[in-house]
Length: 287
Ligand code: APR
Image 1: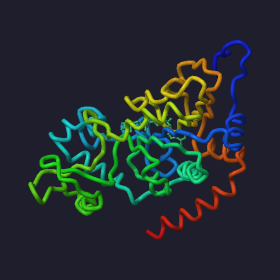
Image 2: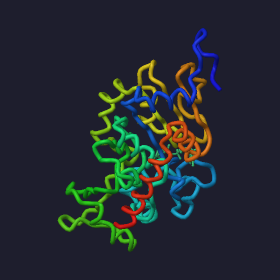
Image 3: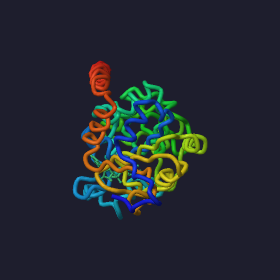
Image 4: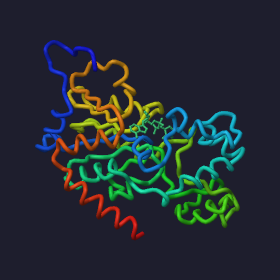
């Protein structure tokens, strides 16, 4: 898969990583995730040719696909974003096995943090506590008036968005925008938690992301050289695609759920994960 590495150091395998997790040698695990972990839940990702969101925005007559998440375009015409928000608004989708695997890492005290680019809220729905999450591209859980900066709960916008009405601030009549990070906007302050997390991480797991968007993508290179990095993704991305020379990089290519299932089998956590998913499913259904 990769170059021969240096000298006679053996290339690490998924089995090596599983053994170190199972024996709790790895107990400060950082996860980096993107839209590819939510496609098994029925939410399209952005860049998979054909099915990705950016290939399916013709109806909005955008100058180019990413404009739908650009702050300047939003001020020019907020309708495409709110039409998309209606489709993506949390509440219509359930977390999948991948989200519950990360929840299980947390329950076992081995998750240091999950850095997600996703705005679908499925991590919280799977029971991963907000303090364990860095929602680097924001969230629908909260919203802010674009004029007077008044803060709102995401739930307060739900009816307008579902009815196709642009949410307006009762105080100043300005448009209220969900706290999704648009291209051209600052990332949340919490993103900078990486400055203390990544230097102490003892395993990095990268899942379901093309690693195309900065500054999130660069985090993949922010763990120490001695730290193992596991990619679970359909294809090689970021440093894994540049012909990484690290002997401790491992790539489990293919469907993310299959890759996670293979890891869970090696960990001997299949039973626990099924219990968690059943309980999680019921709880989520109760809401
Ligand atoms: N199994 C494995 N890999 C998958 C699956 C799956 N079921 N579904 C998708 N993938 C992979 C794709 O092959 C791709 O490599 O996940 C990756 C998804 O990449 P993108 O669609 O680019 O999504 P993401 O990396 O999250 O995009 C980053 O771009 O537009 C911005 O703000 C937006 O947060 C988003 C950012």
